[in-house]
Image (spheres, rainbow, N blue to C red):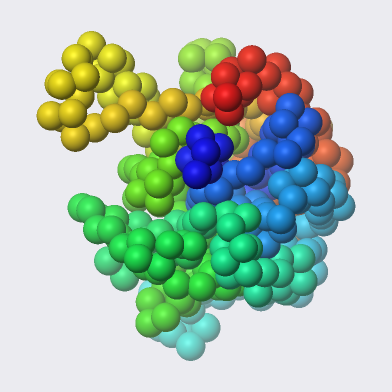
Length: 373
């Protein structure tokens, strides 16, 4: 195969922030309309985008535009239940568990929101039966989504590969399973901890693919990628203005920091690790590189040029009323806007992120063209 066949796409995520990735993909197919991306890997909400791309892989150009259309029309009630009765029922179960020591085990709550609408949506928009066909036809070589096993805290990569001899891999606290991807694998990978419920896959329960995942770039490399296009959903840390707190942080800020640490920091650290490996290998002779059994991996890392939490501030009013009420109890709007940015599955917010992703991708045109060529 040519070099393009060795390109791997890595999409992380975090709830509605994944709309940004759709915009990046729109820019990517404008830069190279006939692009082939044979290795698709995703985790968290990035798994939704990867699943969609894998099902529409006959034309990545069309797939990217369809994905933008999907995100730009998405509404909160298509992702989780927003009616007052459902939200109150879940809230009351949680209060009972906390107040009475969990004696009402039959009503035990394991999440704040119910996501059965999302499962229905994914079954409608992702043609899962197309994924094996696209693998067989060579439109893609492999697709993988990662989820976290709540039973043993391992990160599990569920993958399908065109090469049936592709063996599963195992590393410390990481493993993979070769299978046909279905809706439960996407649901598991994108199940935000605490907010969304665990998803049963086989005989275990799984949650968001970012949890305990110290190496989100690894599946793409294991599946044969020699160069990577990595799309994150958080503004790079060195670009974020340092804020000095003059008073005790409110619960909303603390929750935002925790969510960011859980969901967004692992990709940053893995990219930094790859940068160090590439830099070290560049200092070695070809013989030294061969002895190290490592090889440099070219990559382009695209992240938002703006703070998505700040963008979310202007759209918080679109959240269901009861959620807005609960969030107001955690602090000021600026303190809970980060949390809101994970839950704003609304056209106005998602369209803003698509536009930003598109712009950021085109601004990286020289780097992308160099990577692809």
